[in-house]
Image (cartoon, rainbow, N blue to C red; front, side):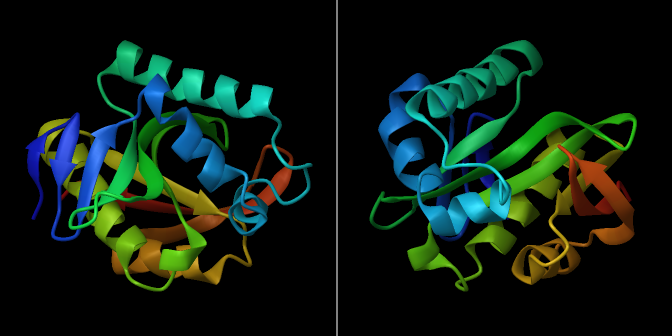
Length: 175
């Protein structure tokens, strides 16, 4: 169960904060790690500083335009940044969908943080935003992310091409 407003959500182990420009250094640290970037952009070079800042600006603008978006994830006990994730509009397979997405610092992989975040995304999306459906997708060989989707109630839909790469698309509909 999560508590708080959409801009700041708390779960059992996480604090989810609305992504802001002042999070640039923490986002750089996360997204510049090759172990993380290969799960997001496997066939592109490491993101440049300009790429990272443009991406952050787009995430901030999404919040401003839609009233929801990506959060910076902090460990609830230590307040350390442990990742990024949330809900955002995305264009997949010819449709404008709301996507649940996540990236966790490698030192915290395998601890269930992405699953905890995915559950918060589902709760916020369906209970606070009144969404009818949320999608999630990943590269076919990202088995950890696929397990997160399945543990969070997402059902495999089909293979798609997203940003020129094969992905697997999962969907979860509101109850």
